[in-house]
Length: 338
Image (cartoon, rainbow, N blue to C red; front, top):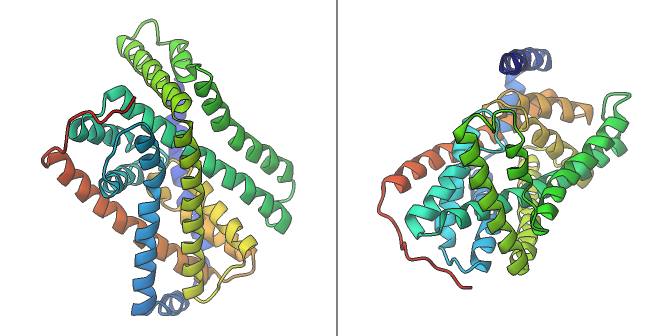
């Protein structure tokens, strides 16, 4: 019964997105959208492509720092390709926050001989730190949205509460793991199915082991956590620079406050459980930019640019995932330094 409710809720959400888009697209003049995109000549396209490649490479920095701090010296280029392959799986499946992590674990274990628990722990720490950075930005972004007064009336307190909650949850999880707790294993052990399903018990034991390994990495290699936090800040800086550059080339450069507000809206859109935030991204850009006084055609031009970028990188990631999974393995000798 609960699964049926979830399925119906998701179906209603997916049906609501086309309606929201239809409302947002009313009165859109396609020639104006084309005029906005025509500002992107060969030079700006090349610059944006290079900057986008830099952003993709920056996303692997946190993971590389964590592994290097634990003694696993793996090529940064390979980790970037693994991360891009994982992004493709997450992007093209419902919910874009998770999905490709098992592939990352597979690459570390099969191609580089990293123990399964250690490989999983590196992904757990990487994702928790990523969520902390993302939610910290969302908390900042919601504060900016409140200051700009572009939120629906009566939702200010809700936005503040949501921003605090987003920041506290991953921070609390990381703190618990650092102190030696096993929150994931504890939750799985108390699920209604835990006592009757063998696979739930195996998953609980696996998560318990991975969280223990994450505890070891966090306590023995704190420099890795510090470096990963710095890598997160670098990644967000590169991402914001890319957005500013894109809006500048499209003819409506955003000041820092408006840039943060618009990026916040799009990050929230990617929390919607549809592949690639399809529809949610476009609606969020149109609603946020028009609330700031920009034209629908400008918002739609930016949305199309982002969609083409993400689909292109997703396609490359799928190709890389297939090629690397079927290719020759790398150095399988454990690269540990205790």
